[in-house]
Image (tube, rainbow, N blue to C red; front, side, top):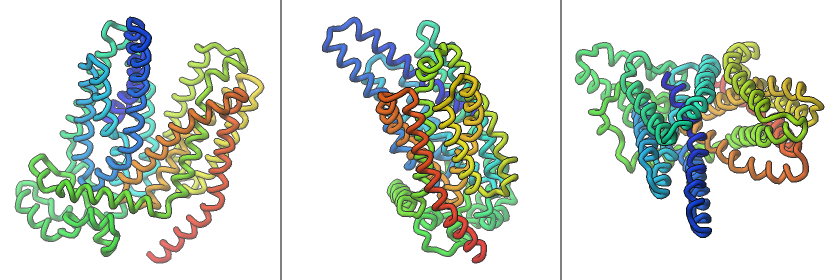
Length: 469
């Protein structure tokens, strides 16, 4: 419930941005020409502020959740996001509009933290199945969000109603996170830190004597609880000390026990630096190439349907809704398909990328709408599987203790694709309505070639690790 509600607010965001631009346009019509130019400029700055802040904050906030813990970081992100939407609902000037976007752009990363939390709680074998179900929940939020936002914005003052509704949803999510039984129901079960979890579980048998038990635990597990953030960053300690055991039963009284602000900042910087200097460039590059290929496929879909097949916008909307719904439900197929491939995520990513590339090519040369319908059906499935595979591989290669940093870095890479794809689509559109998907095919082929070169090396490293264990 928490995940789907949070995802729904992200869907309403796009509607609110369109409403904001509309409001700015209406206001600008009552001013002089210079004022019109200023209003449009402010509208453009306002629209880009959120994306730029998300681009740079995804990795930082994800790494911060590795340092201070998922619960504390999620509570702060939800509260500050609610503050941003509340300010948006109370805004009466352009300056306040821009100010309201700052906390939302910096801290609206609840979905990324949820993914990192799930990677902490489940084993590597269970992770694709759980991530697939999580993607179904978040995708349903994206489908339902525009419906709710459209209904609210049709009424007088609908934009402000939508803003306050989003703030209320984030506050509801905050309450749910606060009330969750973190100490029992959310005990980590990952293979990487099962030893640490077992040692901590023995320290929490008696809930009635929490204070004394916590003191004993801090003495017996000082390496895990006090030096885990630094150990996870530097990797200079023994393996058993490099496996962080999360303390899920933090309350506000324990926040003072968290590292100082400077120590948090240095730990976040060290984690980001370690990921940036790691040998994972190939995974992030594959993610960027495939993400841009899919974005180019969707970039001019409506316009291409109208120019190529004289399809009305209403029919195109139905086709897009069908594809989105099918993509959401495809998350249920991730678990069975990964079992079919023996949890070989590298091979599954390669095959799904090849299938996506072929389907985009078939769409570009499709002679009829029915061929487009068939391509859209299978593209929705292949892209859902591919996203889950690349996320799981990043977590496998990077390690469970840096899951927040890794997922945040992946979101930043996707954000780069969102910046580049519209520019490339506009250039390709000048040559042909099929130009953007054709360019997407070229980028997907580059990603496939990179996979063909790197997958054998990944498999060789995996066999070495198994031999060492």
